[in-house]
Length: 369
Image (cartoon, rainbow, N blue to C red; front, side):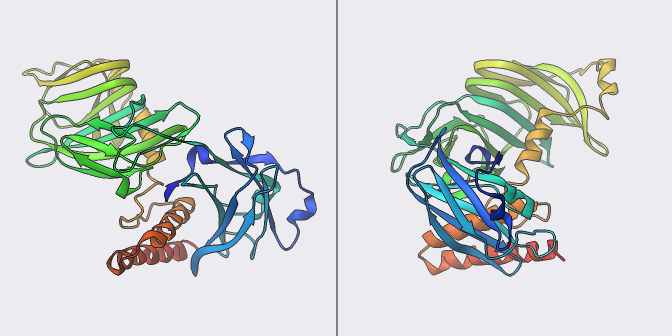
């Protein structure tokens, strides 16, 4: 089973058509499931609960003819005091869609919406998708350059793209000579991203909208070529100082930015790129930077910064827990782990997943202390 978290799969904020008495004790969650823009007329919704004491499925409800469903919650959602958080999920055409986290009682005044999509199987080699934003950070780490490459992949269709058996949904070339590629933060489950023959391969379902992919790899030297096939709406390259003088063929120097105390990056960028290969060339003379660069050091906010802020709450489900995760990110991680437990038959795999789950619940418990 595939899991799709957050993003376009859940929306809160529509007025509830149900009477206000539904918000009296016991608390009631009124919701609706949409298939695209139309109510889903059949299906099962699962209610999940996460608290410092544990997590898991607590109830199920059948979707009504108008897409509606309702749950009597076993406790008042109150993440700040009791630590009780609720959310719902729907399995539709083999993809599991999660709604938003309910962390406070007042959220029950709005209709809870879970949005699902029809699935479309893609060819075994995957499909080409536009990259809405690509942000590449490069910094020197002793004897090699470390690259952190962020992609906002944009599915502009109306269906969730799914892979064939043994196939992928999307793939992309790594720079020639890139070594030790690994998955970083983002929206992709770790078992759905692999690296083969100089490419990153994504087999996770891609619902309509953006999905963030972060990968890391190493480069032997700064003079490299960076392939960018297909359409890239915005490309930003940030090279951490100190670094050799550099010219980037295909990108323009933009400014120098500070992303932390004493940490500056030279930024290069371009927009509306189609089927290009960028070339990084070390030069002998960097030349004086434009005066306006320095005025931006303390004030520039990068699009990349927004991407990183978006990426941080969505950690890999089986990686070590990050103390910086917010509550919603923690409970969605637990949800992914519960799904992984249901699919992991081998005891050796289950033990590692259970350790991860216990660590997340411990972190939730500390947050509520």
